[in-house]
Image 1 (cartoon, rainbow, N blue to C red):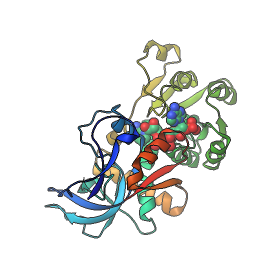
Image 2: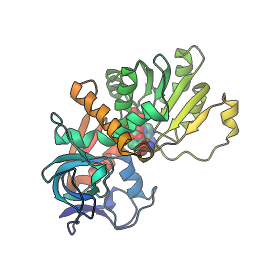
Image 3: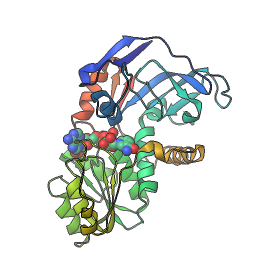
Image 4: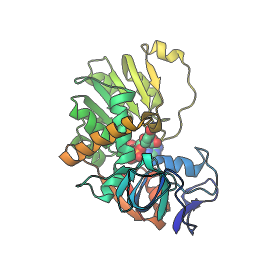
Amino acid sequence: MRAIVVEKAGGPEELTLQEIPTPDPGPGQVLVRTHAAGVNFMDIYQRSGHYKVDHPFTPGGEASGVIEALGEGVTELAVGDQVTTAQAKKAYAELFVADADRVIPVPDGIDLDLAAAFPLQGLTAHYLARSSANPEPGETVIVHAGAGGVGLLLTQLLAARGVRVLTTVSTPEKAELSREAGAADVFGYDDFRERAKEVTGGEGVAVVYDGVGMSTFDDSLASLRVRGEMVLFGAASGPVPPFELQRLASGGSLSVTRPTMHHFMQTPEERAWRYRELFDALTAGTLSVRIDRRFPLEDAREAHAALASRSTTGKLLLIA
Ligand SMILES: NC(=O)c1ccc[n+]([C@@H]2O[C@H](COP(=O)([O-])OP(=O)(O)OC[C@H]3O[C@@H](n4cnc5c(N)ncnc54)[C@H](OP(=O)(O)O)[C@@H]3O)[C@@H](O)[C@H]2O)c1
């Protein structure tokens, strides 16, 4: 089968299309013929060496497709089922193997492009909005990169609950998209801290959701109200260097958390709850997913370069 393989850590040029053997599903696993794989920052962190992986390495944690074979003991799924997952491995390929309990049947009304486009960013937005922090209706929060994949979804989920969402973006076009998703105010990165203080009467915001990282972290902390919560969930601009914990006291007894999706998908019940709420919102039309661009599998390099370049708004897909 054709798959994208990374032989050593490096830039997008390390993503090469190769012919490799088709994997066999082990006990409790399924073999899925890939329809589309989602492109995520996680894949970039793994490709570049920011997250350690063994080589040769095939990226791909998120994908949709059709079950082609069942491993021993799998009874809940059948050959031919349309499925999606945000917890696969090696999905930048024509076929991939996944644990059956991490694979979710796609309900009627959701096509396989959408099924590949929403899970990782959608589940992330869901746990950020509901579990990492849980702002009350009427409270004010900041969502950085408000026109990005996670940003657009998180803004919609929070705004639907009556949370007042302030976002940051880098261009007027992105500002427009972020407003359409429900942002009450949209700021640039240079002065979001002052603007957030201004619109909260000097108090500061209850929560900052920061997936940008290095370039925003300091001003994010400074934007919080007393006992505000800093949810650092990514490093699109680079990792945040170590910092002095005393700053949390002087900043107003602040808290900082650095969550990652897998820890919020621990049990079958928790996974089912998050997927169910997202599927319900997608089919009811109260949550919309913006698919920015589709690339053929062999153009994985272009897809990685695009995501890292800040030129995208929403999801990038690799069509297998
Ligand atoms: N912890 C978790 O569980 C989890 C799960 C999924 C994703 N994430 C994280 O969530 C963040 C967003 O992911 P996403 O897939 O939705 O990406 P995205 O937001 O669509 O893209 C990243 C955005 O960050 C902004 N940005 C600011 N400075 C940047 C820089 N120096 N380089 C690149 N981008 C910069 C850009 O928007 P502007 O041009 O508007 O600034 C860019 O479009 C990433 O940090 C990712 O690692 C975390």
